[in-house]
Image 1 (cartoon, helix red, strand yellow):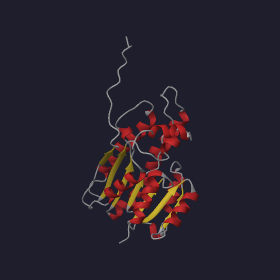
Image 2 (tube, rainbow, N blue to C red; image 1 turned 90 degrees about the vertical axis):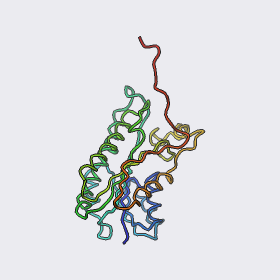
Image 3 (tube, rainbow, N blue to C red; image 1 turned 30 degrees about the horizontal axis):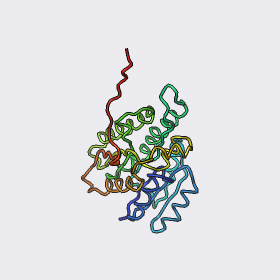
Image 4 (cartoon, rainbow, N blue to C red; image 1 turned 135 degrees about the vertical axis):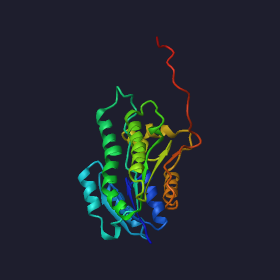
Length: 252
């Protein structure tokens, strides 16, 4: 039986890589994002499976609800939701950060994830099966200077996922979170408001994770037997680990 996956933020990075690997594995796709030209490209690329593309900004609740209500019969039962849409904006300390950037991160990383999850959950519960994989980040567990609101939104993703597991106990619906560390995609370009030079400097001299690395792990999570639930998967490149606690030695 062909299964169907819905990928948010499918136009680039982790989302596009996830769409590619699931298409190769024979899953039908529902792909959504804000750039329709890239979604149409996905439809042209993955001719071996049925691809339903919807232009949707997950920050807009009405658009999310319309996406789910408008799913064609062929794609009406979503077996897997990959809540990938998300972003970071800026790396200034909290006292210098733009409030508008904070609001966009909250609206996308928290509210958008909630809107899509809430819209799809009832049908998964009714069918007694389904899987939600939420894209978290090591920033949700490990703070760093400039991470402020981004890290807080990803901490929400982790705890929201845990509570979903508690609520869905006995329904047959699975919930997993994957929490990547340093990974090279359009992420840093967006974070630095299009400054490619600043974004490239983040990865200079490193071998970061790639979108394909993450997509393969997402597929592995989804491909576990139905009685197996991987709650949380944290992953870093070998070049990344933890540093010592910061100490201000000039404090009085």
